[in-house]
Image (cartoon, rainbow, N blue to C red; front, top):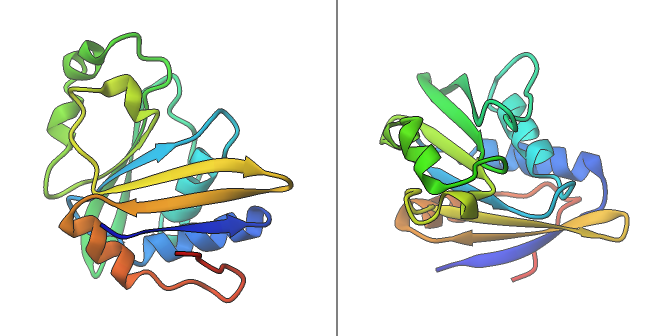
Length: 165
């Protein structure tokens, strides 16, 4: 499957990447976000949600584990659910909360700290790894399914972002 890396020089570049990702969202998409604390997982999700049309605050679901947002994609109402599994002590918590039902063909699920939900967490279509690199960030995007590949194939970058294969 296809993958590439992008260097984000600053917060504006993170916002631009979030907007680029928002333009290729499809219902049923599962996105895993990997990275250390402070790597920019929530910042990227916030930029994506705002670019997808959410108006208002986007908070980290560190304590609630999940935050749903309603957006419109091609005139269709779609729920984007932002998960943060950092505080989960076991994958069974994910199942007990009933979150597995949210992973369906109608919703888009974005999951921070997906390793905390393994092995019960549904497989991702797109894996995004973020890492601090000097003043900016390095972001690796990897398609892990046909839906993920379709997203990456449709992804267009603004001039200030230059993907490297």
